[in-house]
Amino acid sequence: MSKPRPYRSTPVFDQDSLPAALRARHDTKAGVWGVIRVIEGELRLTYLDPTSEVILTPDRPGLIEPQQPHFVTPLGTMKMQVDFWDRPPPGF
Image 1: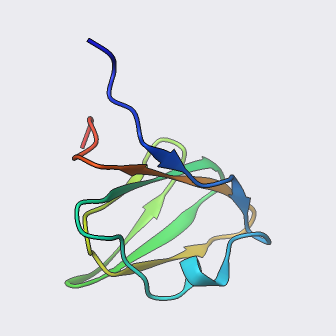
Image 2: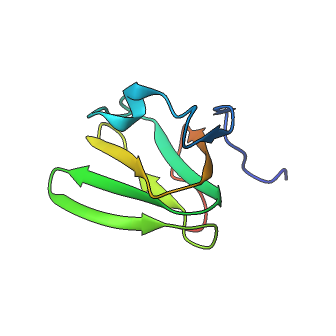
């Protein structure tokens, strides 16, 4: 049996190339989970419903559940990527 894999991943973004759409309120579609992986540095993930924040690092990825409103804020120099899953990703 093959290891579960995301069906799509974004390009790697840094603090300068991170799209404005990801810095503003947005959410995943129904049936889509997102895993934010920080490759270097730190990124603040802000959930909006209910409101909470978590600092993501290379050792601490962030999980976005389907239709969960959120946005991200770079904390200095960083690199990150988002993996998209059609089922709950393993490890969360």
